[in-house]
Image 1 (tube, rainbow, N blue to C red):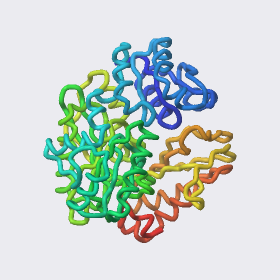
Image 2 (image 1 turned 90 degrees about the horizontal axis):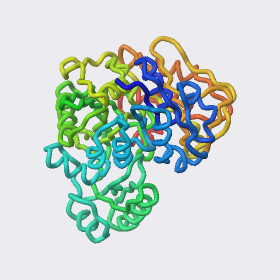
Image 3 (image 1 turned 45 degrees about the horizontal axis):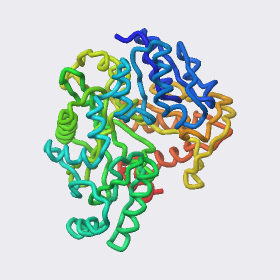
Amino acid sequence: MFKKILVANRGEIAVRVIRACKEMGIQTVAVFSEADRDALHVKMADESVLIGPASSLKSYLNVSNIIRAAEQTRADAIHPGYGFLSENAGFARICESSGLTFIGPPPEAIEIMGDKAKARQKMIEAGVPVVPGSQAVMLDEETAEALGEEIGYPLLIKASAGGGGRGMRIAQNVAELNQAVQNAQKEAQMFFGNPEIYLEKYMETVRHIEFQILGDKHGNIVHLGERDCSLQRRNQKLLEEAPASTLTPELRAEMGLAAVEAAKSVGYSSAGTVEFILDQSGRFYFIEMNTRIQVEHPVTELVTGIDLVKEQIRIAAGKSLGFRQEDIRISGWAIECRINAENTEKNFMPSPGTIGIYREPQGTGVRVDSSACEGYCLSPYYDSLIGKLIVWGANRHEAIQRLERALKEYKIEGVPTTIPFHLKVITNPAYIRGEVHTDFIERWM
């Protein structure tokens, strides 16, 4: 097992990883930017190293400074958390060439699944169902028009290297297609340095269902059930729950098997998430795989009792999974709300600032993953996430009731937050009935 791990991230996920390491008896190294000198993850770690100014490009994305920090502190491994360098195959290779273990999947798996067009082709070869669309990347509008005629509108234009809803556009007809293609390419180039796109049939009134998988370096892969991530805004998740209220045991088994086969097809190890869309007739289609720990991983932890970060670390150290598929049991219901510093009355505009009063909810079945506190400064240089509120209940009804209670207890002053929005969502009759699709906000709110 590792003696010392450097956590190449910040905020709540850095705190989450450090806590797991402490429970495993592993020393930790925090890296931080000038803006994060007094951050909680810095205070919690055994050692800390300044890696650059506030800009993430010059700090948390500064590969040479991060590797230097690991070498200076004699770390054995690097945990990238999510975002930043977590899905960077080049960084994973640099870690390996520097004698450091990258706590994540093999770089080859990151490369294939990080390119959504390549991942789509790989799934077709593996027999995993995919959304009707283009077989490869495309750059010209004529090819896009021809495909539109073939599979019909609306079309979803997606950046091959995209993520987080970036580089995505919807074209309702041929008149909108050219502009949508151009805009998707521009955004893809801006955010990912790659203008390649591909097209899919836009599936309306669907659910976004993802399966958590774990694979070790000995070829063992299991899934830990699903998460329903349908409640989204502009293709970005706002609330997640596990399990999904719409899945029968038979459909869960079928989708879980497809997720495992998807992971096996690229020789996957570590934690990962295979994402599907599910239509109203019960047909499901692969859309992408995230080759890292997910923001919403706590809901899976609460219903399975398995610590995903600890499993990541054990797998990276060469340990075999300590359980088989038949050992996985789903117990109860868990829901997570992302608490962001955003003004929901102004189109969810990020609102950095300094937190005044800060009081987290407590009680049975309540978990908060956060690095915030009173006086905490939310920097404009990073995302607007304050923390994640996760609750567990014996069933969905109890989980919703507990979440409402916890949201009302969560006190944050000084910046606007998404707490009032989440309260509106979970008290909406359609949400309570479980009628949650990716167009929920547009349809009901």
